[in-house]
Length: 611
Ligand code: GLC
Image 1 (cartoon, rainbow, N blue to C red):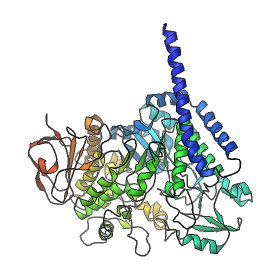
Image 2: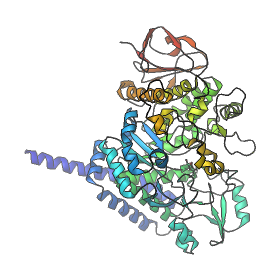
Image 3: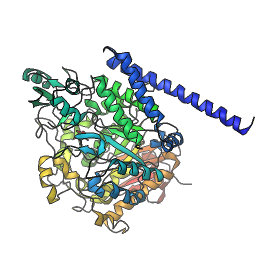
Image 4: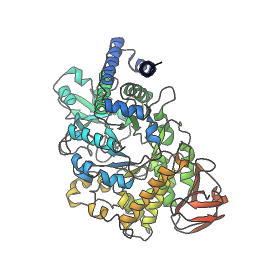
């Protein structure tokens, strides 16, 4: 056989296997779509139109993106590689705009970051937009940040460097200023049906009896009166964020098209915002209804048909047991990665209580996730720290204690956070940058605490993400120009402007910024180069260490054992108690030891067998 003939056979085989794969994915999508919309008239014709829509996008996938799909093995496995480190930030606060961001890529690369998660950058409504989470146009960029061409250029620049871009897609709602909402207000029945409009105050009252307010003080209630619609629009979050009506298949198809449009620009993944809220059912809290999962299964399969390596990140800030289903099943996958918000809250709870128990409990609970999916591990993000995510694994009394502690309300607390809005008996969540919650700058051990949290976060199974500024221990935001934002929404306390002067001191190993930056660089480097971090093994508690010490192992025998001291006191323990190799080497500090292991206050060690 000639070389040409072999090539032709390979190409035929690859086309055949691609079309088999497309059929399999279509079957998954169809099952979900039948369950969601099969009872509606014209369903079969609608299904045909969805299939055509996806085929059109698949046919026009750019050659460079196809090559990326092929190199990544057409799946989300690329995001599970140990070298992957995320960075979440506001484009304006970090770099001014998208061209500015491209200029800052060397800084992020130097830190070890491999994928970017900019907070919403699509065109938002004017005025208050919940930090960009009220989108007025999903197909253009916020003008102050740049253009679609800039976004495409960013994706290209990242790909050239082996990096990736995960974009926020606010799929649960649009701004009241979105064209769909405008058309609905103008009386177009087609667009009225894109939203949930309730006719009477009595209906609102009946629905609200089961709903929980997300912002009980600044945006109480879940409905907003619209005189033009002569009804109450469902607005789970703020009155200007109109919930989309996914019982209408047209809304499903619109959002699918937006995902495919963005994937076509070179976006590598989506953070799907507020996924727990996508479906409404009277008489329930309208959170985590089974249809939310069907929508994600269908989007997942359809996006895979056109853009196979694009990943989905679930933003479901719920209890661990409620987050797990967002990974879907082997037969019907949903999200490839999900915020491990329970473990994140447990990190802080263990720190506040100086006890490893909360972390042990949440690690056990997290360990049952499917191997094909990953946790997104993080220390802080742009939202408040929600303690109720620890239920039922950590008692409410402990949640209350750490909430008071980190909000700075307890005498002797090193933390300078602030409580976020809560009503009644709920445990207040906490605002504040990690550095200020750890007491950096107020207390000699503040930086050790911040380093401890990131050391544990980076050794867990899953993908670690850094929140903007934590790499230089950036403090809370008290910028005078943000005064009105801070008054309106306490979460702006942890949405500071990047301090580039401090960042420029990152090579100075004596400065706070330099120490933190180097620490993260080391963690990133060790992750990327240590075989134990390959493969997706759960981080299971190991050994029987003292109660302030968390110890767990990654990678089985020959792997890495993490030992983290959550207390302010030094602890002398043994490798046996930690479930670590007796002759050990600390991959973070390079120190070695035999049998005995000493941990300084708030020290974490990554212990591997000394060879
Ligand atoms: C998500 C975002 C949060 C926003 C909300 C409404 O929870 O993380 O910042 O307020 O969605 O869009």
